[in-house]
Picture 1 (cartoon, rainbow, N blue to C red):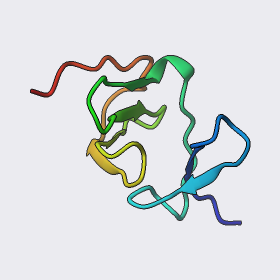
Picture 2 (tube, rainbow, N blue to C red):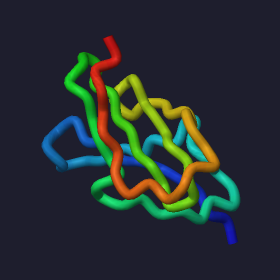
Picture 3 (cartoon, rainbow, N blue to C red):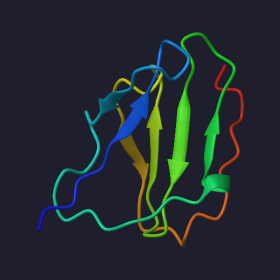
Length: 86
């Protein structure tokens, strides 16, 4: 059984959705994300961030098109707060 990660985005108000997987784990991925552990910034393009119950934090600086793990081996992420990256 494979367990992969993806986020989804819509550019038409939710009529259609596209999966975004680049940079996210695609094998043996068994974590969850709490609603409070997701956040976005106000930049253009928008950045998005989420933390997991397995102690990783992922970031996308390009509206979710690609992701990278920016922290690991942390306690369970119960919330994520975005600070201005300027």
